[in-house]
Length: 63
Image (cartoon, rainbow, N blue to C red; front, side, top):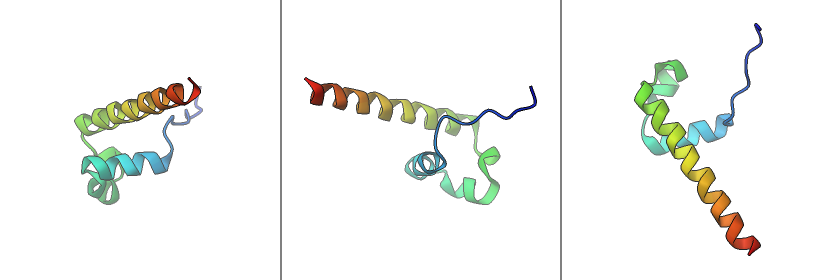
Protein backbone atom coordinates (compact mmCIF):
# COMPACT_ATOMS: atom_id res chain seq x y z
CA UNK A 1 0.00 0.00 0.00
CA UNK A 2 3.01 2.28 0.32
CA UNK A 3 3.43 2.46 -3.44
CA UNK A 4 3.04 5.82 -5.07
CA UNK A 5 0.45 5.99 -7.84
CA UNK A 6 1.71 7.18 -11.17
CA UNK A 7 0.08 10.37 -12.45
CA UNK A 8 -2.22 10.32 -15.43
CA UNK A 9 -0.78 13.46 -17.00
CA UNK A 10 2.78 13.68 -18.26
CA UNK A 11 5.08 16.23 -16.70
CA UNK A 12 5.25 18.04 -20.04
CA UNK A 13 1.46 18.33 -20.30
CA UNK A 14 1.18 19.60 -16.72
CA UNK A 15 3.83 22.25 -17.38
CA UNK A 16 2.16 23.34 -20.64
CA UNK A 17 -1.21 23.63 -18.90
CA UNK A 18 0.31 25.58 -15.99
CA UNK A 19 1.85 28.01 -18.49
CA UNK A 20 -1.44 28.34 -20.40
CA UNK A 21 -3.39 28.94 -17.19
CA UNK A 22 -0.86 31.40 -15.78
CA UNK A 23 0.53 29.70 -12.67
CA UNK A 24 3.71 28.13 -14.00
CA UNK A 25 5.79 30.69 -12.07
CA UNK A 26 4.37 29.32 -8.83
CA UNK A 27 5.28 25.78 -9.90
CA UNK A 28 8.85 26.87 -10.62
CA UNK A 29 9.19 28.73 -7.31
CA UNK A 30 7.27 26.41 -4.97
CA UNK A 31 6.71 23.14 -6.78
CA UNK A 32 3.35 21.56 -7.55
CA UNK A 33 2.35 21.64 -3.89
CA UNK A 34 2.42 25.44 -4.05
CA UNK A 35 -0.49 25.81 -6.47
CA UNK A 36 -4.00 26.58 -5.27
CA UNK A 37 -6.69 23.90 -5.34
CA UNK A 38 -8.59 26.11 -7.81
CA UNK A 39 -5.59 26.10 -10.18
CA UNK A 40 -5.28 22.31 -9.92
CA UNK A 41 -8.98 21.96 -10.69
CA UNK A 42 -8.71 24.29 -13.68
CA UNK A 43 -5.73 22.28 -14.93
CA UNK A 44 -7.71 19.03 -14.75
CA UNK A 45 -10.72 20.66 -16.41
CA UNK A 46 -8.53 21.92 -19.27
CA UNK A 47 -6.87 18.51 -19.68
CA UNK A 48 -10.34 16.92 -19.97
CA UNK A 49 -11.35 19.51 -22.59
CA UNK A 50 -8.23 18.73 -24.62
CA UNK A 51 -8.85 14.97 -24.38
CA UNK A 52 -12.48 15.37 -25.44
CA UNK A 53 -11.43 17.52 -28.38
CA UNK A 54 -8.80 14.98 -29.44
CA UNK A 55 -11.41 12.20 -29.34
CA UNK A 56 -13.88 14.28 -31.34
CA UNK A 57 -11.21 15.08 -33.94
CA UNK A 58 -10.24 11.43 -34.14
CA UNK A 59 -13.89 10.43 -34.60
CA UNK A 60 -14.33 12.90 -37.44
CA UNK A 61 -11.23 11.58 -39.21
CA UNK A 62 -12.47 7.99 -38.94
CA UNK A 63 -15.88 8.83 -40.48
